[in-house]
Length: 73
Image (cartoon, rainbow, N blue to C red):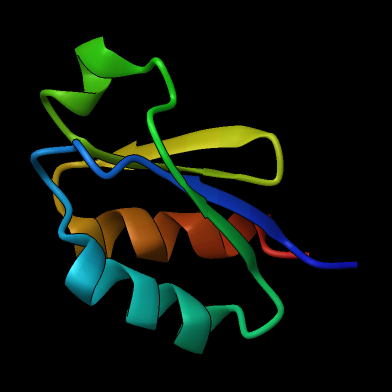
């Protein structure tokens, strides 16, 4: 079963150009969806991603990816 990963292209704390390749390396079978997640309050303050039904946030892109590893199937 593919991992469901969603990221927002408007998040000020992540850059899709660097984040997507890191996600693909970390989770090769990921089903990555890009778009607004209606999570604008926290999104404006911290990096975040949605993985397999969980919102994960951290101060930086690399930290959010490290936290997300716990939710990879």
